Length: 99
Image (cartoon, rainbow, N blue to C red; front, side, top):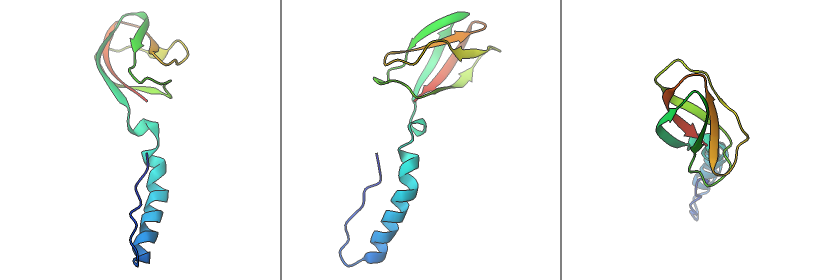
């Protein structure tokens, strides 16, 4: 995904501005972390939990958006195209961003 460049004949300053904006904003727009898939109210039990991440691609990362208990959570299996495997130290409910 990137910013479109609108062709404007005879308006060289506008064309240059668009090019400059695109060079600065396209890396941000293209960063997968800026558009995560959010999974709400995922119940994790103590130990390994396999979660369908709905990306249809191999994730690049994940983060906890919300958690209702003091729990240590880490990824316990390699990323794959269908699931995310997280290990929780205690049972909890979380919301997760996956990108």
